Amino acid sequence: MTAAYSQLAAHFGKIAALSNAVGILQWDSDAMMPKGAAGTRAESMALLHVLRHGMVTDPRIGDWLGEAESDGRLSDWERANLREIRRSWTVETALPADLVEASSKAISASEMAWRQARADADFPALLPYLSEVLKLQREIGQAKGEKLGLSAYDALLNDYEPGGRSAKIDALFDDLAGFLPGFVEEVLTVQARRPASPAPEGPFPVEAQRALGLKMMAALGYDFERGRLDISTHPFCGGADNDVRITTRYDETDFSRALMGVLHETGHALYEQGRPQAWMSQPVGHARSMSLHESQSLLVEMQACRSREFIGFAAPEMRAAFGGSGPAWEVDTLWRRYTQVERGLIRVDADEVTYPAHVILRYRIEKALIANEMPLAELPGAWNAGMRELLGVEPPDDRLGCLQDIHWPSGGWGYFPTYTLGAMTAAQIFDAACRAVPDILPAIGRGDFKPLVGWLREHIHGQGSLYETDELLSRATGRPLDAGVFKAHLKRRYLGE
Image 1 (tube, one colour):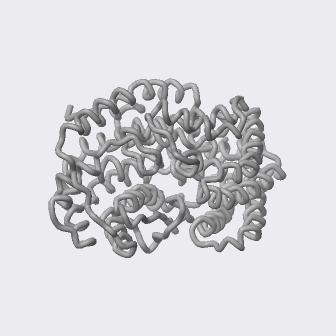
Image 2 (image 1 turned 120 degrees about the vertical axis):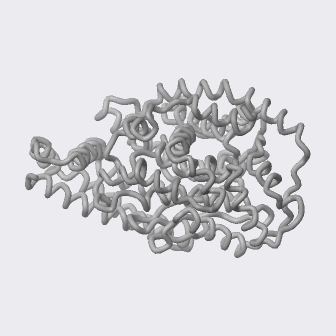
Image 3 (image 1 turned 90 degrees about the vertical axis):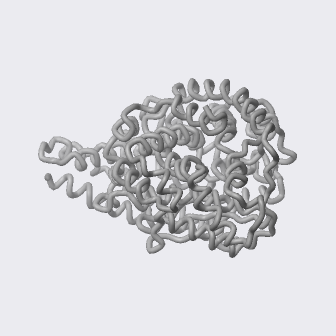
């Protein structure tokens, strides 16, 4: 290989080391940091973001790329690495350093304000902080959009879903928005005919919930030598390469919320822990896209761990963890509860039938806000109206409404659509895996996830960013993303079709 490629690889190895430091500091901010450290942490994070931006936009990268891309001796992995480096360099060079610094500081302040505003159900308290984040996100989207020939929103979306476009998502989500209300009604009618499923009675001590979560993580294959489980206001997966940390939140009246949060985030963590070690510090070793990432969390939580097979394995573990007995703890009763469809207020607690409606609402709102088609002060009203239209419910306050997610306060504009793209992708990948390895579901029933995780390691996790998203999915499943697979899964599970 050329000296230019070696210089690029070394340079981006240093960027990875810096990004790892940022990742651990961000995890600490969300999970462990005392409130009084917020100002100092914001300064540190802003500086690190500026330093990283400076390294990614180093003027030498363009020259190195030009020389390295002409080398015919490179492997497929090395060529894909150059493609990912050029993608990153093109996007990052669109942003001036002062905009990166201002955005980092605004996000740090907004995240801290969100925590208090959410607790107090006080959107006006967050408004000035979120307004600054939104203003800067518009500027970032416009700057990147000019460089890429995209709208501001598509430029922000491109950061999470390379190659993703809102026009394609609009068509997909409009179709789902037309399908879901009627389907939800049909499912609710079917479920209303069944005998009521008694709920396990609490309280469920936090330590017992934590122990159960750790046991399920171990069954899934989570590597505790390279990660840990903690508590945060909003469950997430973060950390660094080979230090993949997840969080959940506990409710002593309902252990299923924390458990499903743990399973969801473990799906993310398995993807991160399964990335190719030889390329871990290079862009080609990163996870392919956020729709792929969300597919892995939703595959674990929704496809695998709400199956009858999983509940058959988990029910005795649940009974043992909480000393449960009686009809509420029987396998069929628990399965009905874990596949119960309800119109709810909280996205992270939503079932897989109503979940896409939560995402469609957020997608439509954030697209309008980035385009400056709606004043930010009108967010609570627009949110409540959208919940009525899509789900037939209305939040009693903003804590259960527009303040429930951290994504917008933390600068995650353009992220939300990847959740539903991920749900569709999860259904397609799980379907392909089960067809290729018929023992996957029976093994899950025995508490053995090795057949499933082994297939995912080979076809998804271990591929890193070697292929573009559409090609990776086609190679793994035999076809590009097909919404019909997701709809068929929902009809099969919830209507018995």
